[in-house]
Length: 245
Image (cartoon, rainbow, N blue to C red; front, side, top):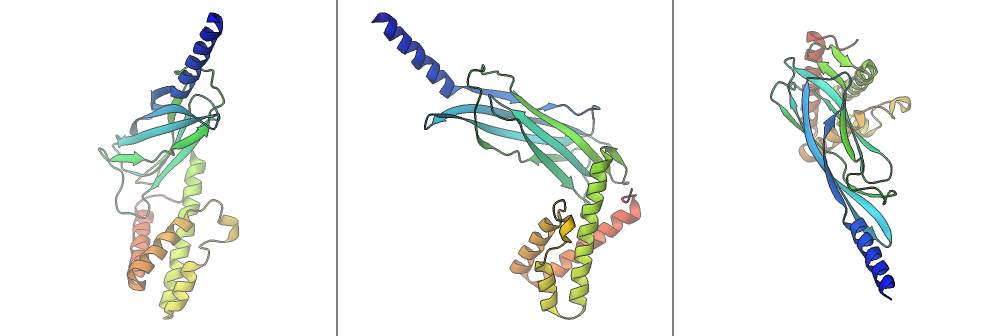
């Protein structure tokens, strides 16, 4: 009987351990080549709980970056990736583009990042609490105020195409409004902002949603003023840097 009780105690102890595992890892910059433009910091805590006999893993994360670059930055793309106790490796892309703004990222600026949080299935319940858990960031792309870029040119090409889509969309809206028919402007604003072949990659839908919200809250005049402002910022960028490379 004693051996049975001991076995039960041992089983119960292991079950409790599996349900209460938790570990916190610091954010690690794995950019290659090493970069000195943004100092990233953050941490992610992985914890497990059992629901209906299944083990789930929860992750809670924070991340931020301080701009170190002596040259003003217009845009950058960073990939956050993490792996906890088990399950698949997860990733999230952070894209910041100031092309349609008068403000660049300059030395001393701080950027807070939103890293997805929540529950995933944990498939490696036998691993240790340290378990090889990782939380990394990889700075993939930087574009400076003169239009020059660092690292992945394909991302720069993608951004240039997205900006062109947004400019064309806003110019079309101004054209519709200039024709003197406000309803034509409203109709054009609510149609897909880009041709079908561009829709998978473009960020013009985010611009469209913003314009719709401004129009709904403040009216046509305010939406038109925002469009003109965005186009003026874009024109200034184009005149002061090489953003078509």
